[in-house]
Length: 314
Image 1: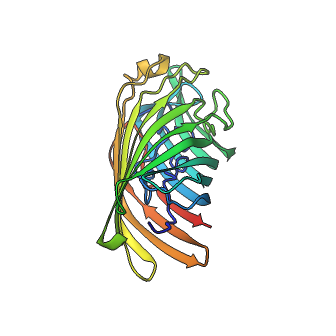
Image 2: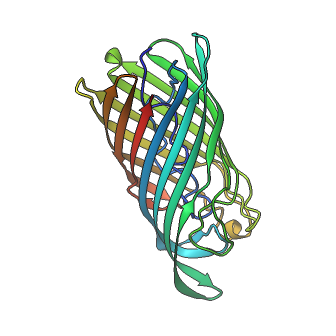
Image 3: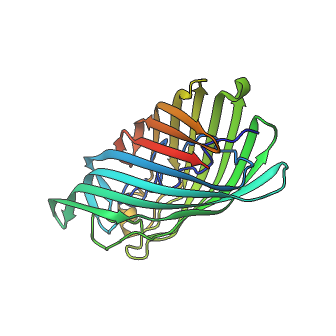
């Protein structure tokens, strides 16, 4: 099994942006950004691997739609810009050669949020705007287990945990935390074709949220699946497509959610992805750039998410 640069990091926090269906309209995942190269595969070489990723997302919910806000209350529509810089470390355990190997992951995210809403003030409404920059909710996976059926077929099992480490203030628009814990059991699968130059990887997960105790808002469980196909060339470049589907499985609950009939949402997204691998003695780096268009969106912001990432193996 050759050494690979893009590991099953799942860019766990790179798809989890602030002030965000679920409370704030967006929840943790952004459609299509959870798809990662080699999602089912942990390489056999022990040691640290790193990823730096940058996400840009500008989305909106129309002014005719009421949206539950993370800081409490609701608004008529939502226009928001989110930027996220995530630093991820993946440690591959030193295990004997075999069908299984293991890793652990932690992500440190920093976010910028700019939110515009028309807020409800009793029978009146008024436009409000807020922005903030700082540490967002950290994510970690204590154990990622990868099973190797063959040289070309791989499966990973993991539990990703999001902790409410970002700044939060009840009543504020641009909170840098969802103010809850989120647990995401995740399955990744990778199939390689054409001597490993053609890759298909898929990531499936369900997000379980704890209650936001400040607002008494309980997000419903969210199912998501993200997939990508990449053809890699001998000159280091790779090209393909990436897509995602988010489907909320149950209604939100709580005083605000009940007024909005549960605010249950879903979305689809599709777009291109390009990669480039640069190798050197003892390591390599893979650069990846993707852009997606969201469509068939309900009770979530709709936009065109983009992500640039660099994965480094030493």
